[in-house]
Length: 323
Image (cartoon, rainbow, N blue to C red; front, top):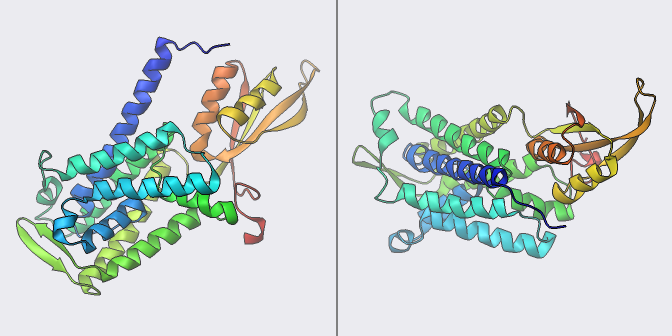
């Protein structure tokens, strides 16, 4: 039976893609207008692109902008991901990757006013630190908004999927490992930042280079906190219990559309004394909104409970031998 697309579905889809576009703009704005002008650094694909852009000759770097390099890095990771773990990337992830690169190029171009934030905080004693915090919060907001709409910025997510093909490693450890590597590499960069028309050269292993690395760790912490704050949770897991009449079809929907496992548990309603089954799903908190949406579409009358789980171990989560 063919699916019927209603005007409500179109409006919801339009809203989701509009919010993801806004999220990618926030990410690019925070990075290019706040973090880099303050002499900061971060991780992920954007951090790696910044390092590559800094070591390229000026003539090439002007062509291979940070936004273009972010796109190239994500495309390479996507190809590797498809070759190693298969095609598990949704259209929203592809959209976010393309839009993020586009937003980087727009914010970095002459059509966008440059130096807005650096001028605003030029007379503040701790202006650089404030800019890094504000930029990280803007990046975290963009990531969280995209996550909530089912999108992803790629980068570390793809690296985590590739690594988990061979060894179970938590998302947080992959993120921390890659970001630490990028930040330590930034110690050996020679870059120039411009503040109020004055160029300042950051030499390798100088005090400014170490300050840039520290700013990077501050940025990682603020991004993580912001994502958790916006999503009202963190990267821990949720346990969802679903009580409905058509439990088999509900489990099939979760498996095929959310790509999450489900477990049927024997249950009995004490008021009705009827035997039934409950559908139990354990998922990352960032996947909870998508699953609840699917449950509502499948059975609006379903009874649902959502609880935080302190630890989840096994395939797809943390390895038991890591405890």
